[in-house]
Image (tube, rainbow, N blue to C red; front, side):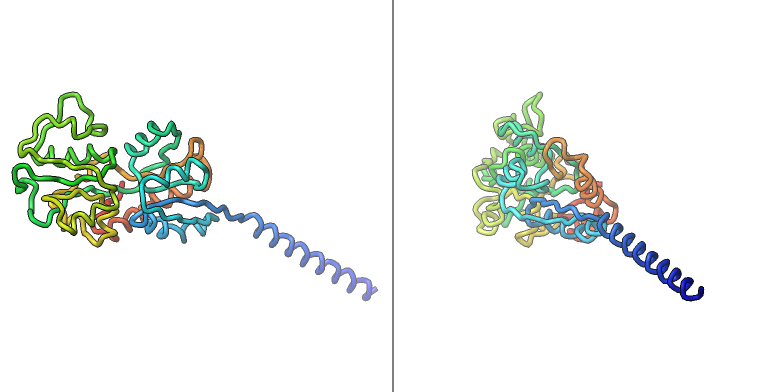
Length: 275
């Protein structure tokens, strides 16, 4: 009788062990990892994404960051499904790209503002620019309105009535107090080099390229875009993908208070949190 009881107890113990092993297997398999690839400019976009990687890993998201050094390929790569999202542009740029390429990429949410700035080796203020000075601007049409706004705020130009600054070009200048020559034929990534070689009285540089070149926008620029600017950098995805769980988790991490505060401290005004 004792022998039978011992066998019975051993059987129960064995069954319990199998049950626990089975439960353990179920728990580990339920935490599946989802991999997403996000295209980004090197700095600050890729660095911000690297910052949220650990947070996303805890939530089952394996974030891969693919770095691009131009403004052309990231949207093409996203549209062709080489990427799950990209993070390098502001909304007017995205809208302009969709219009020119018959695209349907959408804004998943804003993260930060890179204040575009005017830099000069010779002058300390926009108002110090001499008559007939040349100002170098990139060929990125989506940024023209930002540049015009800076010079308008300084009282150096006015814009034709009825023109929306977000879609304005240099042809929309109504009055030009100092007859400034805006030369806009350069790739955005070349602007820091043009500034360093002192090619003109002033050079306009996007904050991401300024930061990459070792410039501190608040300290080194002679004029800087205001924080109230509508040109917040966004994460773009294909139409219909904003509701995907992985994209939602990505946006939650990027827009969290901890990440927004990190951006503020890390870049000291060169990059501003959207919140």
